Image (cartoon, rainbow, N blue to C red):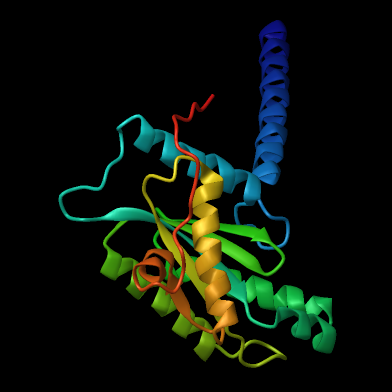
Length: 218
């Protein structure tokens, strides 16, 4: 009985050691994919998820379905954020970022992905929605931010640019389109939502010209 008791205790210690190793590995994995301030996914994770979506399209696993839905990437940028840091300090600026991240996360579905791209810039991947639905989702976030009273600061506004994920081939191409729509929004008054493809159709933006040919993904 004594030997059996000691043997069980040793097993428990081994199991506890293995669990500690797993917990440390899980924490390292979590930290490598998360923004330290907001807890949102980081740019590294964005590159991975966007690459997966595009690879699936190239391999024919993901196409626009009969209901006319698609996947979208949107870039968010808080307007005049530097003024917040300059006037109120970086601690208040960080609080604004935390509150904004929470507003975005609460306004989206569990299947959508939210990333902090850097500084006051955030990105979302919204999957399998119609053009009308994506516009409604982003406008809802835009209005929610505009109407929210941020501690110490008061009103904060956000500019948003977005594009459909379709035949861009590479992740930077998708981001570039959404970023151009964002830049247009910032250059034309800020505090608005702009669709890259609609801006191209209306002649406000010129379509991207890219080299043809096949693209291999490793």
